[in-house]
Image (cartoon, rainbow, N blue to C red; front, top):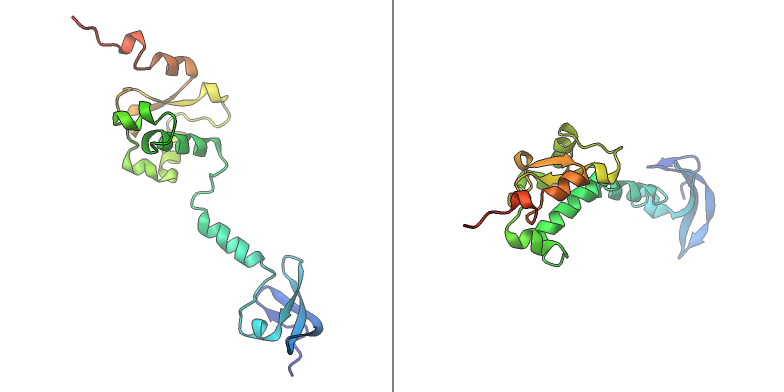
Length: 170
């Protein structure tokens, strides 16, 4: 039997032998993150266990995080914009997607939308009502040439039912 005391396996350093489980030697190990875990010899030596579990969590987080903006207000704006245009179950879909309003292809990548937003007047420090995304042509798509950041007063005057957007029938 090998003595693995003080040897490193991934993020784990073996502290001491800690009995056995199912006729296999168990080692008490300290992870780089500070947690202490018991690991069977074979799992250590074959590389099956390399941390207390923190390595898996970090790897999963990195894999699922594409842009790091999930908790940003702008990310919510982006998600809501897409839902209005693409999700028939969204309460506002009838005013957007059902009328043919789309989100341009490049804005399906959040990082592209985010870059455009910050280069075109988005202010993450502004009150929500002072910085809203607005389509200049109310019948047009969400795309760089048709969108701007405005306050709610401007947003409310730029609706299909506002007087300035109504077509006069003769």
